[in-house]
Image (cartoon, rainbow, N blue to C red; front, side, top):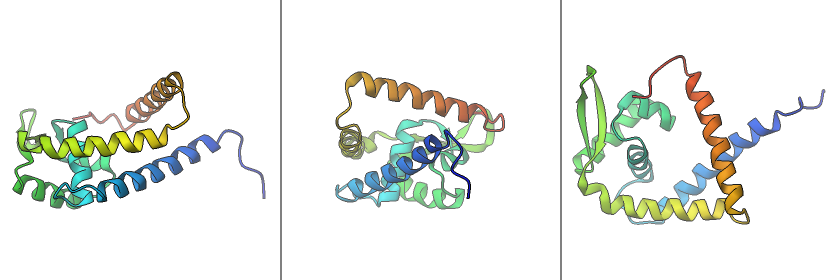
Length: 153
């Protein structure tokens, strides 16, 4: 068997890190009383970071099936934490926004996010953290720009 191609380790490492971060984030969320399931809390966090995003794009960002997301959104809407509105650019599409009632839960999710961030970046300098964020942001943009020309919203 041939040795790995030089440089492919970065891609696989990022995939591993993403999986580990998601696992750590979901474990930390499970230890906080939000009144929501971990999946609902994660969905709320994604809406928070991507206000006004269409349901289909939100499902794609979260890497879940659209029908799975609909169940989470139904629960969050019933709890009064999100609202679905018609997208003015396409009446068939729904945009997801937060309600004021989500603020208390989002504060708890923010604490979890900061805790996981601190654990993940432990031992790095502020400059290293800034460089890492910049590099990862560039990688994300590269991937989004190649996403079959679809728009963000």
